Image (cartoon, rainbow over the protein chains, first blue to last red):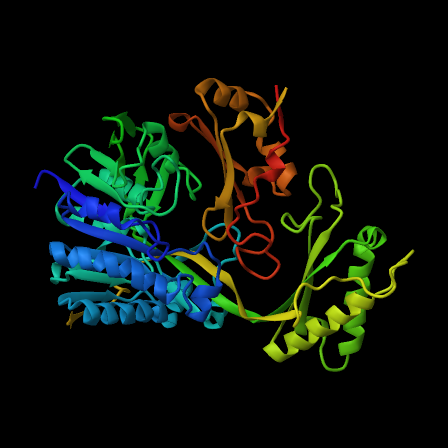
Length: 454
Length: 103
């Protein structure tokens, strides 16, 4: 095999893509196609709750078109990080859509489902054996933190995908995955250079995001050969340049010259980019350096409580000058009203002032310049929804009528845009596990199961 | 002296995972990129002061192939989306850099 053509459907299945781009890609006879369906970008809620960021109808649309294309062409279709967070409920939700589509469109195929949830006991064993290291500023992982977690997933690398495809899967639906593994696995099976394959995958896992003009989700074709790869956007209105492709290596990662996979490190210091024609770019020189011991990146979240918020506006100039005083008074009043039933650790109450420092959370370089209108979000988090509701309700009514120095507008401090004014946010999670786990066999924790669909 | 925001073609911030924010500065040509890189304005100390992080935690990488500079800092408050976070995607954290004056 001297060249491998891979079609990336889009950077996030469910965000939509032009069907014409998909058809252009299919017309190029790709050997296989892939799509990423997840990310931690939207925060910890999805991993914790089992919900998806993209809604069912979005998946029906995007998977409907792409699955039909893959089956028509009889090429493998590999989907990674199913359902945003790639845990079992996320995989099951996408699996359910897949069954619905197979029935609707009359598809028949052999499906591999790969699970990515980590067994807590095996993670705790790794903690005891000192095989887990912290990334960033999270504290070292403890067995208690593992027990506290609502769910832990591991980012799977190449091995589970290779087992799935070698087992005859025509469609692969995987839980939390390294974005690159979705596309690199097939190239690895066919013996292509891993440095080039990983680098190509790292670019196309975002679909055509490296193309100009910069736009929403779209399809891109990667062609991998012995000593280089080529990229071409499948939307006729888009083009690539060496700098647009190179610049993509900066996106969402700390170092444009290096990235790490469970199997090793990819070194891009010697990568070169060349314009082939008006739309295509050729890349070579990327190198793969195998790791001494494989690692799996773990992602875990724990429940922090339940949230209720209210949103309101303020425009009285004396009030705006005294927001800090009002905030302190509201907090004190709420604390004294709930004393006896709730202690200081039983709830959290926060004020976000948009138009002051709502985004940055602290005064900017020019100090705290006040807009003539300031929006406030009041947030209560407590151990259950009812408590959060009542803490928020107390804070809201106290804020509305709170006195402050020089007050002239004595009827009310807040302009509410909505009735009811308060909104339940449901469970609130936080990432407390984002650690690397050293393993003997990077594939072992990921179970691959096969089924006949249709 | 010119503002960094006026010299850059792209100046953006984004999560690099839930624990880090990464800031990308893309310039229209190599000369402008070099001018910023060679100035002392964008030192780890300057970035640390703007973002309330320690200078040793600021990572600055120069990426000639894209006429770009990449700055990565840890989230010093809550992790992405945890209670108290203000920017789940980290998409509006570039603003403190805008006014840096480049000789």
